[in-house]
Image (cartoon, rainbow, N blue to C red; front, side, top):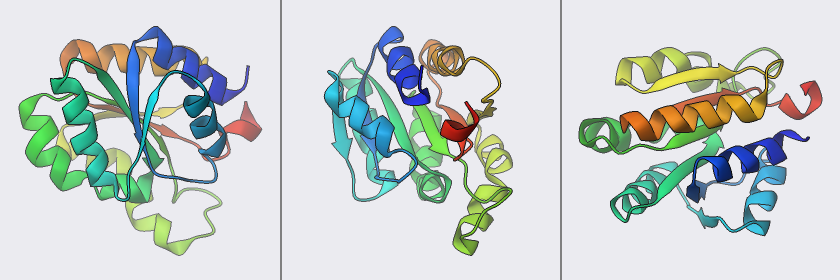
Length: 165
């Protein structure tokens, strides 16, 4: 099973219906699969817009996910810190973790390198998506946790996941 198929299966398993995203070359296969399935996909022009989309989905009784890369996730910090965290608006985030080993784009390093600590300081649970483990299970458990506790949960995905899996 490809990683993007595992994501789709996990989202279906946890009743995720709305996916807000920004295009990214690593995420392109996933976005294509989500659009082929019955998900309501919402292309946003900035990541903080995705927080509004996901909040609206939650208030409307639907579960949502954010799909983007770490530099974009950094753009959501004000929206998460002043809206989703204090109001308990859950979503599951699947974020390509840029800025680590082998990063070629210097602009990705500041947000990507410290992202786990930054999310933790904001009160957003997160973990690295480990390609050596069952990807579907990890995503499903993160979504289960997010919606049961009404908190965001972000999985940071190695951009080379498709090559590692």
